[in-house]
Length: 313
Ligand code: SF4
Image 1 (cartoon, rainbow, N blue to C red):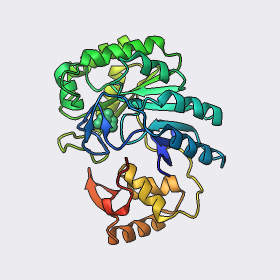
Image 2 (tube, helix red, strand yellow):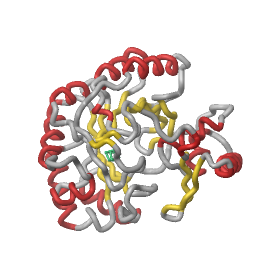
Image 3 (tube, rainbow, N blue to C red):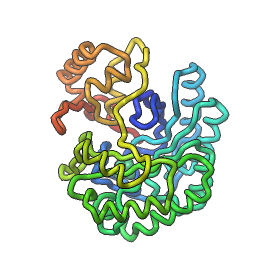
């Protein structure tokens, strides 16, 4: 599949079919905590990316009657950069009654057309990692001239106009935005936005910059309680294992091209015994198709360029 991935176990959404609307690392931001890698095309310019091919792939996949909790527009770049965003959401609505979620960094919410296109989604999950200019620039590394006030104005306009659910995600990084002044500013910004829920994340997977370090689980709980009544720390995978079989090497490689995963992650989403997943991963490592690295004491696997699944345009 060129544009669909998964279903994967989403920490926020359950069993999620991902739809990748944008070429890899085409994004207005270059976040220090990005799991996909450094941004290679930093842009705010919207363009049409392959709507017919994306919808054809969705039609074929959804016709198989898959067991899904949600269809998530996300992937390895910023989905709102695709001018076909609205028509793709409308197409999914015609094809299935599965809720549609959109993960966005919120950078383009200042654009009324983007806000209008997102209107048909059931839930939008924008990010807000800082409410002080300097910290926003440090974490999200937007294009020159793009300010925090532009991001906040877009978020606030979207919140006013959008009838669906807004789940705000905040990435907390040790020593960067976990201090009192940072959190107080974030709290005020969240109060103004008044989202339906706030979900806190931290750098638990391999990220772009080594200094973007995670905060402990206990601190995360305390920060969640301080920031917003009912805010939660994004938990581990909760969806039931899938029963997709046989599972090909290509499926492993495709999943590991999207984001780094542990053997346990893969066992969970593929519905396979952990031992057999470990065996397969060993053989893919020996074939030079995937890499294995440790991050925060956990082993993560990811596809290498020679696997044919490293990137697409
Ligand atoms: S984390 Fe999201 S917004 Fe940030 S650089 Fe990566 S893809 Fe872009």
